[in-house]
Length: 97
Image 1 (cartoon, rainbow, N blue to C red):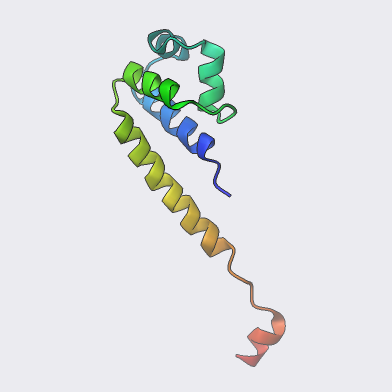
Image 2 (cartoon, rainbow, N blue to C red; image 1 turned 180 degrees about the vertical axis):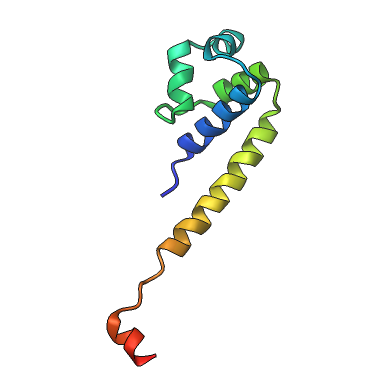
């Protein structure tokens, strides 16, 4: 099962690290505690829509861009989950083939 808060956190962390910025810098700009931002990035806390918008503003990345990237990643993860959930043929089915 895909946990949306983890995918969002991964995307926010990737964006921050790509910019070479620290948690402290982004948390200050987003006006959120460093600890809370860390928990959001690790997928341990759900970010409200207001907080997510504030973090995106601090990262100078449009919210729509982050949500699009998250949506794309969720689609990939769902596809992988469907493929891995396929039934495994039993020995009798394989022998009959």
